Length: 158
Image (cartoon, rainbow, N blue to C red; front, side, top):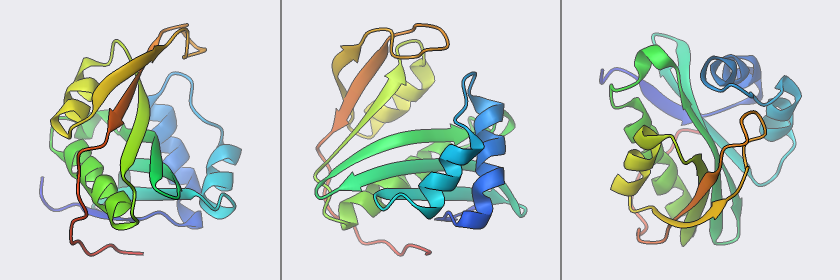
């Protein structure tokens, strides 16, 4: 599945991001949260994956000086295991690195072995646990950190 594209999200993508969010997560963010992230939040950077004119995945990061925090990465279930998440995460890391970010953090459910495996392939490692982090289930989250990447040349669609 190499015929998908990644671009910066825009305010008109709010409902599509929300639809992906609802399809992927048991406790989705609200539509208002996405509207804030895409139109108001100055530290937010969101990206979408399009396939046949449909948004099938998204990722968001918050960047403050040299730190980035991945808010979410979501891929519609029917597009998983096709390299979409891998390419999207690579894109986000390159984007952040080119902004001068020196480390990226995220939280992930301790049971989400597929995501943990993906993050580890990109150099993330577990640094701590947030107890009862997920309010929908009370599940713990691993805090993961990536601090082993270097600025890379890449062209980014705005």
